[in-house]
Image (tube, rainbow, N blue to C red):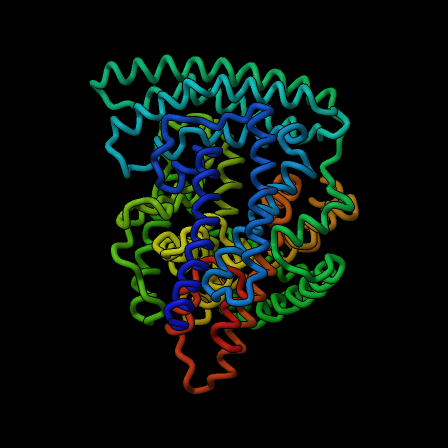
Length: 569
């Protein structure tokens, strides 16, 4: 009888944990239909976010209610390991929502809150193919008819806000984003309809023109808001709370910054030392410069010389590298590859006029098992000058591509997110730990090079990327805690971290729009690399790389400390 009672109590506890997670996900997808579509859940495809004031207050109240329930369940003495992971990730997600919606009041103070959602409203319905084409496009057309409502809600929320709390830089970015979305809905949206689908094209044209008009009105409003806004992009005293909430790292921010500054100096020395070692292979007839900076500048310039001249060459370079990386991983038995890989690589569809949709689009946890992972390669715009095109291909050169392929795809994010999508605990794929995710990708760059992937120029590209990642941590913290300006960021990143202007400008933009995400690359890499080294030491000759790599997929995208606990403690 006692055993039966104990079993019933365990089943009840597990059921309670499943219920609170399931309750949250149901409400979350109902509130954010665009995210539901992105994750492969199509129940809400014909809806769009409705973020009127009462809906925003209801969402805040709901998160407060769930926070209490989750906290109570986390306090249970008999909580199992797997359930604790789910609840801790859910708890952090709730904390992020309350931070953004209540403390930072993003709907009233950050125009990008609205234009990001509007910009993504129909992207997944147009790009993915996990539903029949006509069905997807019909749903996209219906969702597009709701864009004027959301654009109006954006204007009303921001007009009701305090201009002294709105940063003009963010208003300017949002105005450009809304304008680009308007161009897409006016010129490109209906072009997604196949030839001969007259009625569907008519429906998409009508919806697209209505959406474009609303987005143009929003862009004009945001342009005026930029003139009135006097707020700051710097988080100041609130940065430490946001950093801890988003990253889960408890270490004081000042200590994190000091560590990154030390790491940058050490990485510069390491890069110069390696550069001197390989100089005779790269420049056999030339003596190396005496000064480290001159040495590194010459080497990094050489890295950028091997590059595509056209978009077509650039795409083919990527496709060849992906084929080679899959073969390399199989030959060296690095990690178990999921079957099928279903990876599509290419340019973004031509109808995405004005839209910046480059990047990895993983299949979500609700998508079919054989759904494709999409990699839309960033490419220079059709309006780019010859100088801009040359700068693009110089920055995204062949050796950069060799180095970044393991990060973005095999065995990095593509595999990582495909395994996460198939994990039975869906909440982990939805609200995964960003430090683990980016740490894994960065670790895979280093690991593959150590295994023989690439040569000296590819290693130099990786070391340059590591300098960038450390600089990202420094910049993110300095911008928000020390008031670092854009000019100071560009000077620091170009002079102290040896990065090109395009990467420096992008670092500033990301620091003020998505903080503290930039810190996750270096901090995550350190966590994964340290675990890898500690496990090799602990197991000695019994260490098996494939066991480690497969093991790092087993729990899904959870904090690295839980992988450490599972593997070592």
